[in-house]
Image: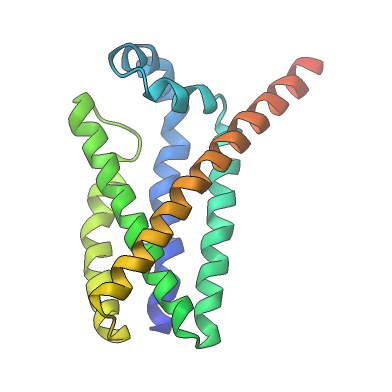
Length: 175
């Protein structure tokens, strides 16, 4: 198990680099059209006003992942299952990105790495379920807990992105 633990943050960073690098340019080119076609996405786009803000949101999520990974080394089964649930939530996130691209019929910054990372994630999850001898109920419960936590944290991450983006803009304007 120890050799799998750090693959979650590694895959997360690999995936999120694509988002960090491409999001601002993609939004500048596609944001208005996507907001018209899919008004609920406007909330998301309004919070991603700067690359620095988006990077801060990703860093906050990364720190949480590192904490969860570190907790697996306590030897307490609950933390192993939380890690597994978090990995499953991350994998669902990849599926959501692929679904977003299908729905809007365009490349989105996250699609390429979602396609690359998805099969690896599924394989790792399946292997870890066997290693943990995890029961279906445990998998479902910890996956739900992690998914709910990820969704809740997404609001905090977007707030951080918007706040930091505005802070950076104000600091640039003051110069």
